[in-house]
Each structure stands twice: as structure tokens, then as C-alpha cells.
Image 1: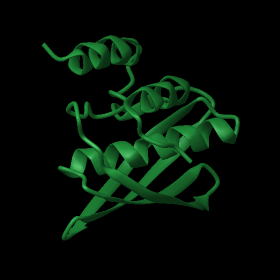
Image 2: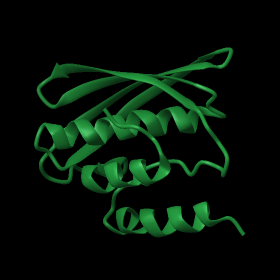
Image 3: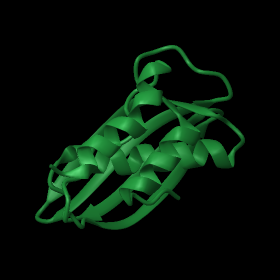
Image 4: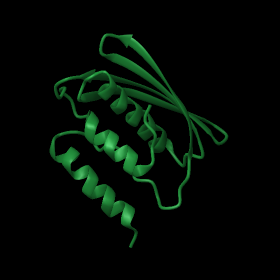
Length: 133
């Protein structure tokens, strides 16, 4: 039995119980995608665009997780505790993947189903080996 799915379930349970979406996708053991960077663009007030690039992702979920981790860290850097996912688009060219995600950041838990607790998410990203900003 692999420890990652069990560990991820235990780490993500508090986020699920608090009404927040799961923080990161669970990566299979031995996976090693290459994270090529994050670009952050403030669109308007609390609306932020995150562009991420990576190589070796197995699917769109890994790219989305990278953008989610960036959004969570950005929220914390700006003194906010939460973010709400607006949209993410993912494109692949060969082994190169690009994600373009938009999040709102806020000090209080925003309405909606795709919200994240920034502190919990950043901690989970670190445990999964996914870089933030």
C-alpha cells in the first residue's frame, strides 16, 4: 500500500471539512515533473492571473495544482487567507505544459465551491513537492 494517497487524504481532510476545495492533486510515487516558473499579474484589485509552465506533467490536474499553489502563496504574501478559483486553461505542446489561471483573493472565506484556504494549501503544496512563488 502506498503512503501518498493516505497521507494526502489526511492532509486534505481539514480543507474539505471547512468547505474549501481540495488543495492539490495527489502525485503518484516516483513522479518528477519539472516546474518551470510562475508569472503573476494583478488584473484588478483582488483579481489575479497566474501563468505557470512545467514539463513532464502527466495530465492537466498537475498543471492546475501548480497554479493553485501559486495562488495560495500569493494570497498569503498579500496578507489574505483565502482564494477563489475563477478559471484555468491548460495547453500542452509536446512535454511542455502551460496553465493560465485566474483567482480572487480575500481575507474572508469567499462564496462558492472552488475556494481554498491559503495557509492549508501552501502547507499541502510543500508536502507534495509543488513549488509556490
